[in-house]
Picture (cartoon, one colour):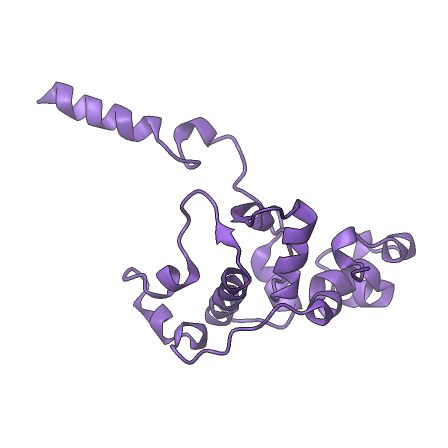
Length: 177
């Protein structure tokens, strides 16, 4: 019996996913890394996330809750609802989550969090945003990256704002050609 228990424990600790012990020293994936769509570059995925209303294409290392608060999404439930709306927008645009990660609807129906089924994004008649370049360019992330004055008043670390950075925003914050 002990051998079977040890074998089961060894299998569980060995893991078979990105969350295994062999990956414990690696950071979790960036938001844009969990999405995939055939023939889409990393830049296109970042733009799609922002077009769908994501606060930022990458929140690793960011105080995620602070980024939401700075953008005006203050409560945990509002943040989760926003996440589900963004995820459903991405799914409707043809993106899929990698590594067998659950869909937004699966998250809405998670029995461990029964309050989620009441989120507006989880209702059958929910209005799911459509990707919008305007939403991307005018969203919190791109405004912080491209507008020096906005950065000074809305960035998580205003001391890192500079006119030079504002004049050279990241490619995901540039208009499409």
